[in-house]
Image (cartoon, rainbow, N blue to C red; front, side, top):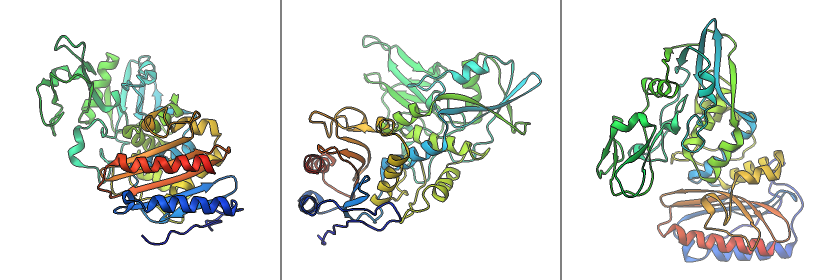
Length: 431
């Protein structure tokens, strides 16, 4: 393994400059991390680490921190920052205008309408107050799937199609009503005649909304449905019990915005459960605040030009969720954004959005407190890749920012996590 460099007061504009931690502590940290990375677990894959003290503005440790990694769901850290700086306190649930007795509407990308978890009815209750409704769906100018998404994942719960006006989370939810009969609970019920009770290699037909559910299955199954303008119209009509017209534009200069759920309710579930659909829709929502067109590239371009222009290693950033292997980010960039959020938003609010070690989300079974929680972070996992970036609270009361990225390993993810956990515990107890 090549020699690992310890850098204090790294020049990175104003971010990584400041007073150094005591030499004795730095030497102990250097020895411990270097020793960990020399273990066999880390010998045959690509690893990058950065550990930073935001109060002292001191880079305590870095190794390959300026190298690009496949971030997987660590991409959601950038999506969270976009949401926090671009979206209002409550989601823009709908754009609309009223002309005489007609209501013209278009989606903003808000994912909460009748979502299986949120079950929000804000838009539905609003629309019930109007007799004549015309829906514009031409404002969605993005692709249904992100660049580089695996085509065979079309039936996976984790990759619903992106859209301007999501409904029911863009998935069909199927489960047994009880364990003694074959009766099914199907949400939305509109697809009840499209479900086939049989074991099948895929959960849905690739080109139609025909769904397959194994009668022996005991758990709940979520299957993305195939979207088009007609499907959205029909589902909305059934939810409202009234007819909806379609239009290609809204004939108004100034559209009004209907406020929806608190934005942090979406942020929290997106980060803690690593919800890909919510992440994708948040970037579309953010674009709705800049343009009449809903497009992920609008948000990414705005963030890179206005909030992330000082990054030393500009990312290759193509989606909101990290499903795409086209994404490339460095540990330094992760730390930069985590530090920006730490400076710009209250600590209690920020930490409540991240998964908490031993308590919630994707790290419920890892990094438990002793007795207090000490890791608030976002994981990112794809085949042969596992990363984690976030905040670590030491027993001395320091809050440290870290990014630990591992790509292209062939051993088990659990083996990599065990060594990461050992290192985090040492940092907690000794810094």
